[in-house]
Image (cartoon, rainbow, N blue to C red; front, side):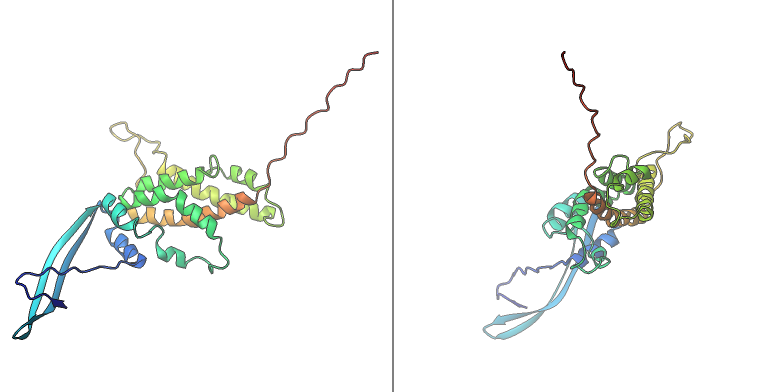
Length: 241
């Protein structure tokens, strides 16, 4: 690099972070409450003087530390980072996938991803349940999915497939409900109902699965016909003689 010939010079380095870089950092951070970077710079500076060019070694190191909130507000949000790019790679070809429903699931699961970044694994699972509850009341009950999906035309969703989808969505939401929302049924020594233990890696898997199944639920629910209004009995007619 070329620097000025003064005794002291300031050099500014620009670090371009891709979404893949951000995903790798999130993976390494693994739920820690702070994001810490140890930065070391080694190089050579060509100093132009009247006597000719001089070569000087440059070395510097330092540490950059920010809270999860700062990491989200100052880095992730401005760079538009939401869903890890590796998840996107698992989707079908972009020309065939329903981007609108994927983006809608991305929005609804935003709180679950934030909880993951804060290292709050159980809260992330509970927030994933909230996302499904914003689509259907008591989504952990497969019968509720089945009732909703009964209004999807049979050529799109035959009964056997409808029952399977209802059981699949209800099964995931049962896990989200029993692990991320409810506590255990057996009190501990302090007579407190314990919360279910959830490791960070477990919550990451569960939120990822939720992000793939929620667009499916959104799409199928959007295909459901409006419930038909109940037939009213004919009005009684009184004829005066």
